Amino acid sequence: MKYRDFRSDTVTKPSKAMLETIFNYQYDDDVFEDDLTIKSLEKKLAGLLGKESALFVPSGTFSNQLALFVHAQRGEEVIVDQNSHIKVYESGASAVIAGVQLYTMESDNGYFDLAKLQSTISEGNIFTARTALICLENAYSGKVLSKEYVDQVCKIAHAKKIPVHLDGARLFNATTFLGISAEKLVENVDTVSICLSKGLGVPIGSMLVGSFDFIEKARLKRKLLGGGMRQVGILGAMGIYALDNNIKKLKIDHSNAAYLTEKLEKLSFVRINYKQRDINMVFCYFNHPKKGLEDFLLKHKIKILPADSNETYRFMTHLDIEKDDVDYLVDKINEFYGG
Image (cartoon, rainbow, N blue to C red; front, side, top):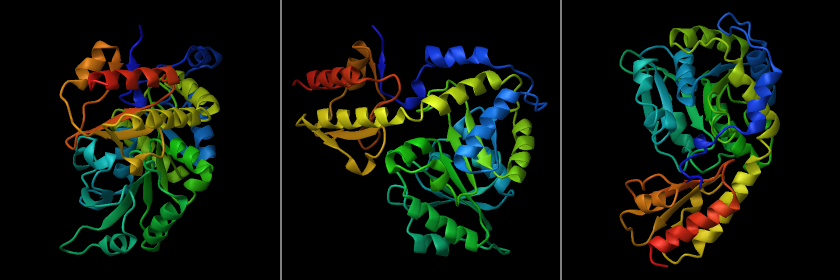
């Protein structure tokens, strides 16, 4: 019996069709810029986002931190959300790699107060750090930022000659929710990080996308950080497959998350956080928290993350989750709570 894994969309396994696609390409040394397969992937994704160039990197953390490393000088300031992935889940890398100071702002599920954002930007002087970059995240946890909001942030930043970097690890989930193209959503953003190993189902890899000049600088610093890989086109082939086949499947993940929400709603002891219910994530609380849920579910071949400090659980649907898996999860949660 397989494990049903609701911890994250990073747990997906490459499909047989995705694995078989690696036999259709030739692989060479990407550090020497000889690997035509990875070049095809980079060109394809840059085109989808309407940008000039892209670079394959090992992970989303690598992609975001490489962006900071290129955009900002040591001692400069980067404005981020206080609960952003860059701030909370990237091991303090911005201080170690780029040597920048993070200015953390509160937000309403990823939406800054724009007046406060404008007043926070610093031109720098003998006492204060210069703001070198503003970072957004879309989707922000389970919440999608609108195109109008992203454009407003870009307008404020660009008026001060400050670039905007978008942590778009789940950008295609956001565009699926909004029903617009990725190119349209990020048309005013300077650089974008895209994760291939989340909802798109590739086993390893992320992409950094931007201008030709930016990506050439990033290529040098990628090598400095140990991210220059050799016949990495073997992963690039799976990335090409994912862009061609799995973006359109994200709507199934969203539908299964909606189905999970409907099933959980029927349990009297569950409360759903609807403010974060745009994509393939379901955040919920149990009215009477009870220890041992994760262990109980694991015994029944279900993997979930522990509740956070606010007793919030996050369940995620993905390519390897079907409706039957959702039914099984909800039945076992109900059984644990005595239903």
